[in-house]
Image 1: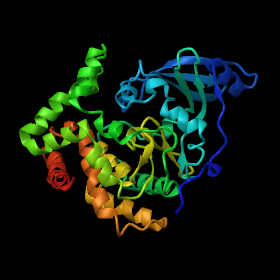
Image 2 (image 1 turned 180 degrees about the vertical axis):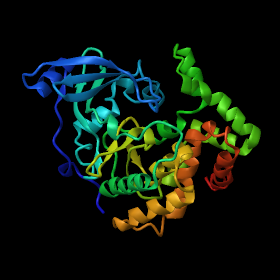
Image 3 (image 1 turned 90 degrees about the vertical axis):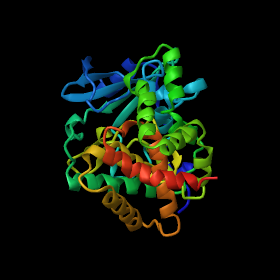
Image 4 (image 1 turned 120 degrees about the vertical axis):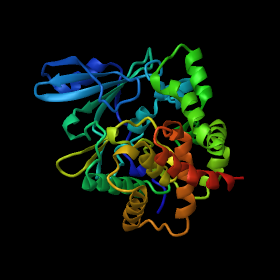
Length: 348
């Protein structure tokens, strides 16, 4: 399949300078108001939310900026005057090119020209989202997510990043203890970054090689990038966690939070899905992997010549991202360490 080309995506989307202007456009003469709104329990970023109400229409306003959100900072999102990646996806029409199975629910973007702050307005689909909790997601719903993940990857097969999206180093370097130090030095005290050093120390107590391997690749993802470059490319979302996923009555999947998109192998999304959702999967990781592979092949993507190697590399990458969070469950940690050490030894 050919890479997705600009004539396959929508023209540049309008971006407003003021939130009031976007809400006035949505209201079309009707009255509107904005109210405080709490975050979903599974939302781990620092971005605050509000609710906009126009008659019986409810919208969610997400306020996005580096000073508010640790995720943006550690991913290099919006750094050095670059557009936030969610805005890039919107303005370049990449969201409009998503397959029919996916609904991003975004209705408008506002970027304040003086502060650079981004305000993303979405339809309020809270009732459709996966409920927070520690219970397993129903098998049919989970399998639909995998199928729609495969649909997204097939739609963008051959994607080349010409837009400044997430780099390999940012994707795999965010959980290094040096990031914790940098965040603290800048006066930030968000909970998740402060967990990285202790988490990796706990991994090292179980498997020194696994911890050292992960930290080396977090510091320099070059060897992982080079090995992954031998496989296929697509557009990955980067954060297929259940907290970002929902199911609409018509069967489509809601996919929120476009902070991590970029060019990568399709197994990168699959491996993150396995790592971040481990406590709530309704079937074994091996069955998840086979289900996704079958979905991809059913959509016309052959996997025979690249699958095994690229899967193992993606699993290694997911451990570099989330291995620090695994020591609390010895069985879960062992599942990853048993695989990634061998794969890491094969890197140049």
